[in-house]
Length: 116
Image 1 (cartoon, one colour):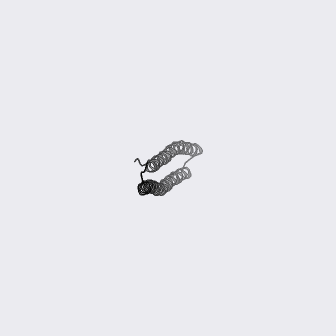
Image 2 (image 1 turned 45 degrees about the horizontal axis):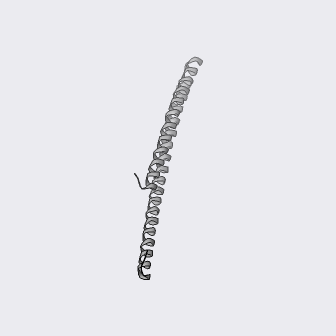
Image 3 (image 1 turned 90 degrees about the vertical axis):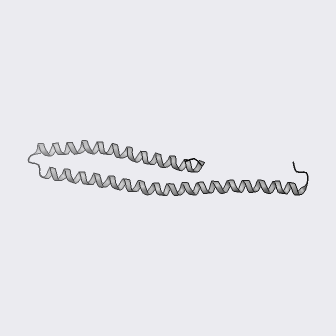
């Protein structure tokens, strides 16, 4: 407890400065987390475009093969192969996107809490 008014004012001023420093540090962490999330959104968008490009390329390749098939059984085999491969590709792509989102979340939370 302060013994005189000047000491009380100094203690109050010190406490206010400490509080302001904490708020400033929290603001900086939030800003860094926001920047990380913006970057993460950009990376996620690019990854999704890459996946869409791959899927489109594979679909056209299967359509060309089906158009050149000699009989209906070849067409059915090509379609079946395409669907099986696309199913596997979709599972892998969803897993990859999920991992990116989880990583971005962990990084953002680490910045918010001051850990990296």
